[in-house]
Image (cartoon, rainbow, N blue to C red; front, side, top):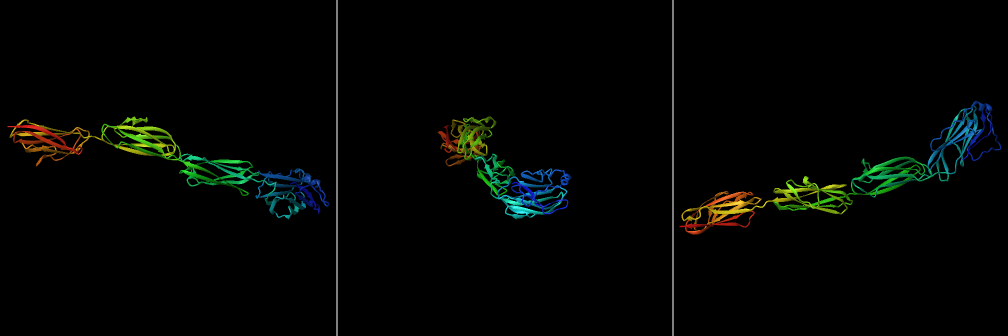
Length: 505
C-alpha cells in the first residue's frame, strides 16, 4: 500500500504547526478545504539532523514517510511503519506506526489514518482508534516538539493473494530390515513446502516398545524454529532394538498457524538363531576309535554370517580322522569356518578320536555367528576294556600210587584290558579221589556233595592272577579226571578245564 501525507489547517498555534492530517492512503491528494503548509524556515534551520531511521529486524519491512520534503533529512515530521514481511493465513501478528516531530515547534490537531488491506482482520489497536470500514484513524490534539508517539495494530491474516501460506512436510526413513545387533539409523526431514516462513516448528516422535535410542530414550523431540520457504532440515538418530519384530515409528511436526504434518516409517528387526546337535559313539572298547557328528542349523529369520564351529577335544584323546579339515586339532580344539548360513540352512562336520585310557570322554562343541547367540552341545563316549580270563589246571605229581595224595593247582589269569568280577570256581572229583583240603586267593574251598567249591573272588584286575589249590587222596587205581568249572560276571557261560591223572598200585 502507499502512504499519503496531508494536513488540514484548523487553528494557529503560536510558534507551531497546526491542523495536520497524516494518512496511509492509496494516492497523494488535497481536499478543497486543504492547502499545503510549509514549515517556517527557522524550524528547518533549527533542526539540521537527519530523521531517525530504525533498523528493521529480520523478517520485517520498514516504510518511512517524510513531510514536507519527502526526504527524512530535510523534513520535520516523520511517519514510520514496521510490518512483518510475510504472514501466514490464520496467524495473529502486530505492526507499529511511529510518529516523530523533529522540530522545535508543536503540532496541533494531528490526524493519522491507516487503510488496512481487505485480507487483514483488525482485533486491537493501542491506543484505540476510530474504525470506519478498513480505515483506522487516530486524532491527536498536540504533538510536542521532539516528541515520538507509537501506535500498535494487532490482527489476523485471512485469505487473499497478498498473504503467504507456509506448509510443512515431515518424512521419516528407516531401513526395511535391520539385524538386532546393528545400529538402526532413522532419518528425519522437515521441509517447508509453502510460500511463507514456517514459525516455531517442532517435531515429536514416540518410539514403539522395544525400540530406543542408543542412550535408552523412547521420546524424541526436535526444536526446528523457523523454516524459510523451500528450506529443509534433516536429522539422523541411531536406534537400537531389544528384540526382533516389526516396528513402526510415528512422528508429528507442528508450527504456528496450525501447521501440522505427520509421518511414519517401519523396520523389521531380524536375527539368526543357531542350533547345534552333536552325536557319536556311546560306548567303545579300548584300542578302537570313536566318532562325532555335529550339525549346525540356522533357525532364525536372518543370514548367520561368518558362522564358526569349535569342538574342544577331551584330555587323553587324539584325533583319529578329520574328513572336514577342522583346524587346530593338535592344540586340543578343532575349528571349522562354516561361512554364511541362510535361514533354514544346515552344515554338518564329522571327525573321530582315539582314547589312551578307559573312562568317559566328553567333548564340547560351540557354534556362533554375527548377531547370533552362541550355542553349545556335548557328547560323551564311554571307553571300556575287555576282560579275558584264562583258566589253567595242573596236577603236581602225576602218576601217583594209590594211597598217596595229589595236588591240583588252579590258576586264573585276566589277560584282558578290563577287570572281571564275581569269579566262581567249582571242582568235580572222580570217585577214585578223596577230598583232603582246598585253599585259594578267595579263601578255603569247601567239600560239597558234587565236588569242591571256593568262595567267590570279587574282582580280578587286568593282567592279574589268582591261584587255588586242591589236595585229594588216590583211593583206587584209575585213569582219573579232575574237572574245574569257572564263571565270571563277564563270562556268563562256564569255562571248563580237565586234568587227567594216573592212579596206580
